[in-house]
Image (cartoon, rainbow, N blue to C red; front, side, top):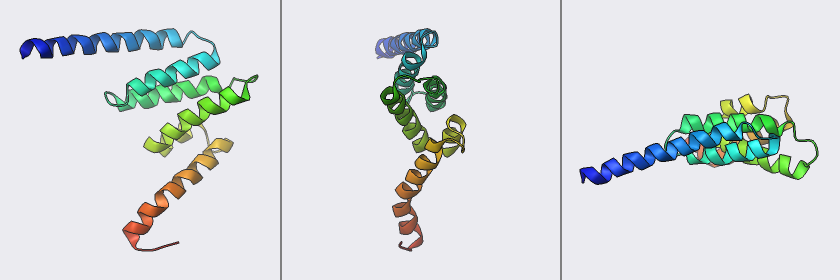
Length: 127
């Protein structure tokens, strides 16, 4: 039993080392590639380090702002990043996309709509 937990620890260390290397390499890539890779790396941290996952999503959003020649890719990446940030924290969403950003209003409205059933169930009020 001790041997298997030791192997697991070693495999976790190896996995984290791979993620750290991938993160460093991603930051040297051009905008769209950097954003996509950081987004993928972030998803690997969801269960093991949620703060790191959110931090990487915030870092992934910045290079999407410089995408000028591919609106479809830009929109896809921004939507993926912002949707996940919204699930966890409106403050993270605002950090990535300030209130003056058109995405912020859209995503906060979506979050409000998503929470209406919870609010009405809690208060007993209906629309």
